Length: 355
Image (tube, rainbow, N blue to C red):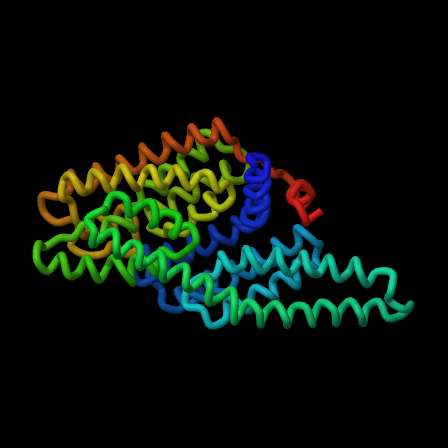
C-alpha cells in the first residue's frame, strides 16, 4: 500500500513539476498587475483569469497524457481537459489531473489495438481520426460528468466549512480548508462562504476571525521553507521564488503544486492551519476585512488597532508549525527527484495499468 501511494504521488509530481515555470509566471503576473498588486495594470491583469482557468489546467492535462503515451497521449489529454475547463467558474486542476491521464491511457489502448490492423498507406489518416474522435468523446464526457462532479466537490467543501463555523469548530476548519485550497477551491471557500460570514460578524464587533481562516499566508510559507530546507530537485530550487510570490505577493496558488507533487505534504499545511487557527480563537483575533491578495502587506492593512500581536503571532505560528511538520515529513518520506523528462515518464511504469 505504501508503494502504491508513493507511486501515485510520483505520478502527480510528474504532471505538476514540469509546469512549475508556468505557475510561477502566472503568480508573478498576478502579484504585479491585479488591482491590489504591486504595480496595478488593467491591460496586463487581463491575462490572469485565462491563464489560471485555461492555460494551466490544459498544460497539466497535456503533461498527464504525455507521460502515459507520448505526444499523442498529451494532445488527447489536453483536448479532453478543455471539456472540464469550459463552462466552469473555478480552476479545473482536479479535472485536468483526471482527464489528462485518462486521455493518454485510452489513446494508448486504442493505438495498441489498431497497430497491426491499419492498412498500409492509411496510418496517418487512422491515427489522426482516432485521436480526434477520442478527444471529442472525452471532452464531452468531461463537460457533462467530470466538471459537475468537481463543482459539486467545491460546493460540498464550502457547506462543510460553513457547518464547522456555525458549530464553533473554527480551528478544525483547517482540516477541510487546506486540502480544498490545494485543489484550487480557495476562492470558492473564501469569497463564497467565509467572507460573507466575516462581513456579518465584523458589523457587530468591528473584526472577524473568518477573514483569517483561508487567507493566512503562514502555513504556505512554512511548507515552502520545508522544501527549501529538506527538499530536492526543482521543488527545492524554485521554493525561494515561490516564497516571495506567496508571502509578499499574496498569491497562495503558487504553493499548491508543491503539495500536489508530494501529497503527504498536505499534513504540513493542515498542521500550520490548525495551530494558527487555534491561536486566533484563543486570542479572539480578527481582521476588519478580507485581505486581498492574502499577503503579509495586505494583512497589515486590515489589522484593527490592538490586534497586531494576536494576528501576526498567529501567522508566525502557522509558519513554524507547517515548516516543522514539513521538514520531518520530507526527511521521513523524501520526494523523488525527477531530473529528466525520461525519468518522469519511466515513473508511470510502476503505476498499475499505465505501463
